[in-house]
Length: 178
Picture (tube, rainbow, N blue to C red):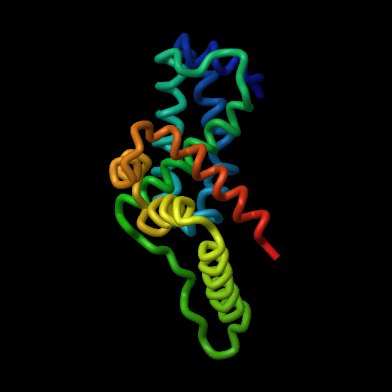
């Protein structure tokens, strides 16, 4: 409908037609992505979309997002949504689990077995990593700590340096994959 630069200008100047068009254009694909990725019900996915759209709008209005863009506005919106959904789950400590299978429902059983195999694989890969990587990855992914808390626990001055460490550790882990 509109290109990204037109959308940015529309958001900056409060153009309702542009904002409404962008909102409508990306709503359904966003909801499908969030519902599939996080097993959310439609109401929760809509709430995440509203929060994400608002965050995008505020980032544009506050000058945090300007041309030239490093990605499309759609990608940026989806990334905000992913982060909002992850933050929401960490905050609530909720676990979304597929329904338990009835007799004869093989795919759900296979899915549960695949999940157990994945957990076992990740544990074995963690054992092959150095102690520093183990601590960072466990604290971030398993204990669901934020970078500030991890930095404080590990005595690191800059939480941003942990992002790089986490990235490097995940890269090492990928290399260890069979």
